[in-house]
Image (cartoon, rainbow, N blue to C red):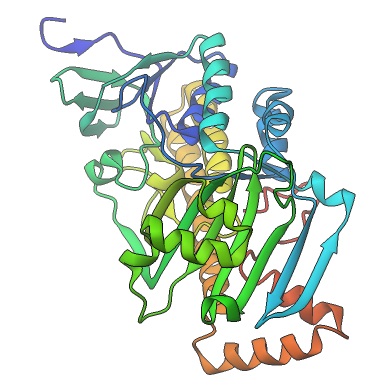
Length: 404
């Protein structure tokens, strides 16, 4: 190691979030030695519930990565028992069916990470914590990652799963294309009620009169409930996101008890962006998850699509490493990157459509929403269209790549 080069690893994954962990586990399951580099310490504390919803196709894909993993994660979460939607104080949709519990598992991201991390460890995945990546250089023969410590690691392939501020993405010269939504949102995690009365059905209210015409949603997850507020352009967002402001508006949505038992408050504007490429010039790096795309969280598209990104990247790299044909190796990585980006663009479009329906600021959408809300009590599809507006969740199809 006199020149700073660490013994080469067959594959490096940058980032130990859920997407990076899935990529590492998928590679290890194919017999490939894996090194995960994580900038944060091993005992890091992950704030908030973060990405909570794992949809049925995603759980099924996790079972394909490791038989039983999807079922294990599902068992650690809760399943929404229904969904109710309101418009201006009027109920416009209600669906409560035991079959809905099969569609998704809702649990804090830290729980998902803990379960996948344990499987990675049992499959021999190596981790280097406090190992921030400072640079990435690729050539036709592989990729070299330079750490902030000065160490350099060479590998045939690397997967960038290092999130929205991805160092890997920037180092390989990839840009994000898209827009940032102008509407601020506030997301609040609250404790589950000790008497077991926490609502287990999802809830969305367009133009809630109790909240001055703002949109609001709440959804259960294991150990708590998430409440989302869409702010108005004239709002004092700093106050609404303060402990006092949260207590005030949360108490108008659910029992005032929840306003006194807040776990986490987050304020942000949604990005609707996709990387202009999911790979580097030499086809030795693949981007996955939020390193490759950022969507509004409604419908859970970020983590769910990230799981598919990770599993597909592992498949492509494992196949590339098994062939001696350089042209074939390059083709496999290019195809994976192209397919991933096409899905990213699709999800960006769908997520942007969800935001348009939620905001209702353009004349066409505003009229469609109003007409649908008046028809909803008598015409079920009208209510279903409004209820699905913020989520844009398609009906799962056998053999489909995913919801996302």
